[in-house]
Length: 432
Image (cartoon, rainbow, N blue to C red; front, side, top):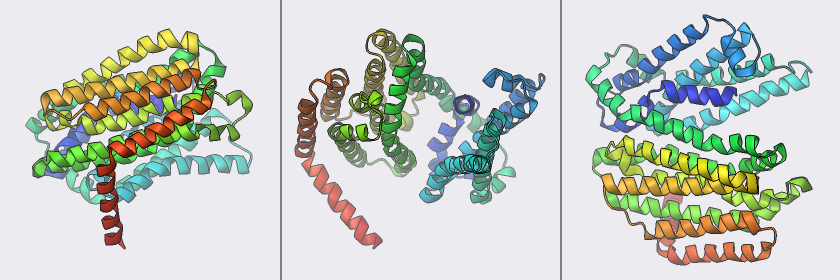
């Protein structure tokens, strides 16, 4: 609950200005002033909101955990503030393309959290909610302090800058619609668990959670691409757009998505050696669970025109369309198929999300080549859905199908693969 509400808090109080900061960074002459304009309004609103909550001192703790504790409420408030500040300071590292520092800051909260939990276990104390919240607070606060140190030159200059109200209004016009889209996307990724909890049973919820955890390996691919792509493409936009480069990157991402789908389908049986027999069905729904990060990554590439053209309303519409599709899909499929129904519904919803972002980008920016995009992703979607439903009966047949999709991708994208390999060799030789 703490992590879910914390992420929603950052989403809500950022006012979409974090996205506006990323969009305007390379076009802004006064970057420290841009940072101050992006961070200050939401921070002030968050502080005011938290102060209002402390009119009843234990309100936050009681609302989240049904425990009336002033200590926990204070710790949770610190978590919210630290998470909010970390979000904006991390964008500095991201936009400056300081990849190692940014990546380490993403990993450190989990490492520090596990370290504190390890101390609790080692010395046999702290097995309660208060100490769990303390561990989370320490980890997120420590990472925020590391961000503060790594970005000290930028935020120190930003303190003395004057906020340009006209610029702030323009940023709000771009970013505010993204709040609704972000909320819709937040709901899109959480809806499957909520419906499983209410329309199915804990056994199905457990199977789905385990499958989602294994599918999170694809989130690494999504995270790396999203971290690199947005700053790079907006930098290209500031310098003059080369649409051929964008099309080439999109094709590389499509190849990677198809190959990752195929590899997951070919080797999903391997996870049965890591799980108890009661989780055998995880191997069949795993591929469908991977659709969320993979289709989302592809939509980041194909939907770039929405950011370049500053048409954020269309991004919101794409999220809302996908939420409605997922809502109907979960409601209809989960009572019949359980975890497989949730996986199928979410996979289809994210394919629709990808289609919507691609079509809207083509509408407001330029027409994209879409035949390969839609045909290859549709094949992966259909096979992953069938695999979730009847994979247990026709396992060997599906292994053959995933192998055939791999060879088809290699054949269709042979030119792009050759170019990519040659570029990789040049890059490696240059680094060496």
